[in-house]
Structure formats: structure tokens, C-alpha cells
Amino acid sequence: MCRRVSRRDWSKLRSERSRPSCSLRRDDRTPTYRGATAEFEAFIPEGYSDSGDGLWYRFAEGPCDYGTCTHVELLAYAPCPGGVYIEANTLDGAGRVVGYTNDLIGSLAKGGTGLATLQVAEAGATQVSITEVTCS
Image (cartoon, rainbow, N blue to C red; front, side):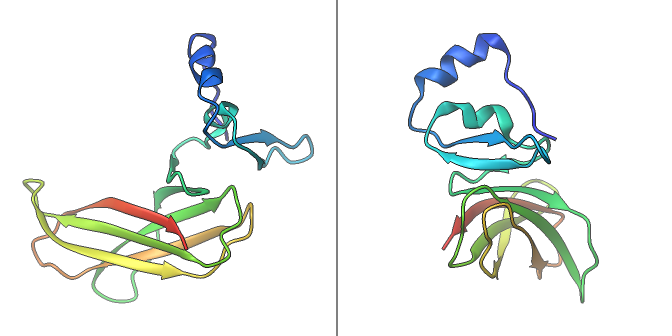
């Protein structure tokens, strides 16, 4: 589900013409990429963050093949033909960086979804903080 922007924030968004935009198709309410206008901000799906590179992402549930891991669900609002690279810091209980993890998944078409798995190797790591989500 996409979130809406209040009328007060709309004027600010309209003045920022360098941002991408999307519209909702009437048939299935799926966000579709339209180019670079500020209206895009109004349609980021709830719970997702914008990578600024044609991708929305959020943490997701899923099993780990081995050890400890976390998953990141990706939704492409623009084509990503070269694949997606995702990197994150691993943090201890005090919020200190104790390592990093990364993953690379295949290409995503506009509207396509993907699931990245970030393996956590550090024994003291209790959190993951995403540092990069890039369309290659």
C-alpha cells in the first residue's frame, strides 16, 4: 500500500523537480515509474525505504540456510538490468560496528521483487544497519 503526502508537504515536493515519480495504475494499484518529478514521494509503499537508485527496500522474514542472517526485500520502481548490490554494517548490542555483510542478486524488471540474504558472521553482532542498496 502506498502512503499519501499531506497538503502541507505537497508544495514542498512540487518544488523539488529532480526526484523520480510514480503513478498508480487503475487496474492493480501497482506503482509505475514515470520519470523525474516530486510526486514520487507520495507513493513509496508503506514500510519501505527509497534507495534513490530505482529501488525500494525493507527488512523481511525468512529462513537462514546456515548461521545467522537477515533478509531484505527489494521492489524495483525502475528497471535494474545489472542486478542489485546491498551492503550493511553489523552492530553489537551497544550499536558499535563490528563487521559488515553484503549480497548481490540478479536483475529486476520494473515492478519486480527480489530477496537478498545478508549473512552475519560476527558472533557479537545483534543488529544490521543497511549502508548501500545499488542498482548495478
